[in-house]
Structure formats: C-alpha cells, structure tokens
Length: 341
Image (cartoon, rainbow, N blue to C red; front, side, top):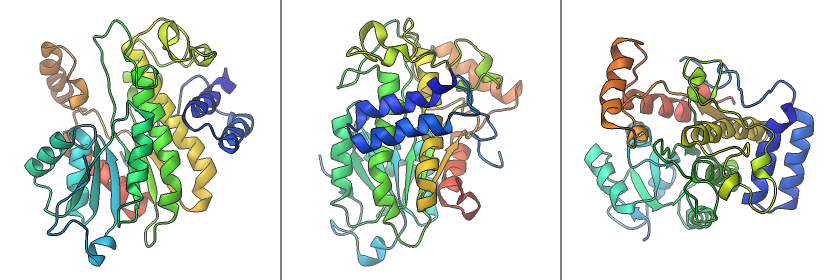
C-alpha cells in the first residue's frame, strides 16, 4: 500500500506526458522515495504554510515595454475568483505581473478590473483545465509572450458535492481528478523548463492544498476520507472512466474524488521537489486556512453556504477571509522566507 501512493503519480503521468524518459523517472521515484508515506496521508507540517480568444494586455500597447519585461511574472490558474483572484491582486500590489489563466476569458477580465488590479499589471489567457489539449495550447501560447515566468500557482479546482454520477474531461477522465490533478500535473511539468530559464528570482511552483485530504486533521476525519487504495481505478483502457472513475476503483463519490485529487497534488509537489529542487525550482503546497466563503462551495446547498462561515467564525474560530488566504498564497510566491521547498 505504501508503494501505491507514489505509484499514483507515476501512473497518472502516463496519461499526461507519454514521454518514456519521464515515465522511467517516475517509476524510479516509486522505488526510491516511497518510504514514510502510507495511503494518501501527508504530514500536515509538510503541507501547510510554514507559519500558519487571445491574450489581453492591459497596457497602452499590445506588448509590454522592456521595463515590464523585467517585472516578475506569475501564472495563476483559476484566478477569476476566490483565492486565485485575491492572490493576483496581492501580487500586483507587490509589483508583479500576473497571467490569469482561466476558462472564461470575459469573466476573468471583468473580475480583475472589478477587483481593482492596476492597469498593465495583468494578462488574461484562456485555459480550460478539463482539457489536456488546452493545457498544451496554453503553454505554447506562453512561449509567445515577451515575459519570463517566475512562478506558477496551481490554484484552480472543481468540486461537485451534489453529483450522483461522475462528470468527465475532454479526454474522458473523471473531472475532479482530471481537472484538479492531471491538468495541473501536466501544466507544472511543461512549465518547469520555463521557470528554470527565468533570471533574477528563485522560480517557484505553488500548489493550493486542503486539510480535508489528511486523516490526521479534524477536517480529514469527516467521511468520506481520501484513500487512493490499490490504484485499481488506474488499470486498463477504462482507467478513470465509467465504473472505474475513482482512483481506488470503488463507487463514485464526488467529495472523495475531490479529496483524492488534492492528495495527488501534494504527492506531485513532493516528487517534483525531489526531481527539480536541486536545479533551482522551489515547490510548495499551502493550505491557506478554512476559507468558508470560497467559491469552491458554490454547489453546496444554500443553508450550508449560510451556516458554514458562521460556524467557522464563531465556533471553531478557524475562519479565514478570501483576502487573507490570497495574501498568504502571495507570500509563498514572493517572499524570501519561502524560497526553499
């Protein structure tokens, strides 16, 4: 079962890359780095924050000036709302340029302007994480931009808690795992060479995490718990499809699928750290706190979305505003104290 944990990252990589060298490296990682992990549990001390169309250029001309090109640039997925948008605002206030990678181009533009991101401080680029082809097209489009990329924030996530049957990505994978994990796995892998090429700043990849995947936490004890099992859902031509839509091969459960996908995010962070940290790229996963008013809860029932924030504010005292969560993410991206994986 211990080998099953990092084998997850290995097997999922086969879906995304189709690269023999990359696959070989992940198989080696399973053999060499499985010690200390069991099931999907990751020690939350390793997981939490240490102390806690065409692109639209918003500038006078289509292309940034040489001064703008020297500005540090971060790519943030799902930055048209919630924590991603709050992090984008915080980074632009720090002088960064942010590439907002979002499925809805118009929604992202309106959200950034409404949030008050300074003119010229952001670029909106379309990215649909439910399509691996869209991820590849996005990275190709990044190559056409006159900016070096200094950071990637894998923030976007979907959760459909009321679904009774799985949804599927363009490639036919179960959507929670396909969007939250597979797409970010591919995106991070393709972006690492570009991050390594950046000058003047320690490049970083930051994954947004959650406490709900960790059974050692209070949130993680609430069923259904994350469990990658024996990876039986990843075998055969119907892997992550149809009746085998769950990684463990069991019956579909949307909340478990979400938790499993976030566990995979953390495993990816740990393996990428092992492979690339020595080459100058910092990898982190941050749980920014209980953001009870996050758009992630948009598909929960009205009564839950009313009561849950009040419960976190006045009972558990764990409530974290979206703006504060964004500030914490931006800190991990930009501040010197977080320059180590």
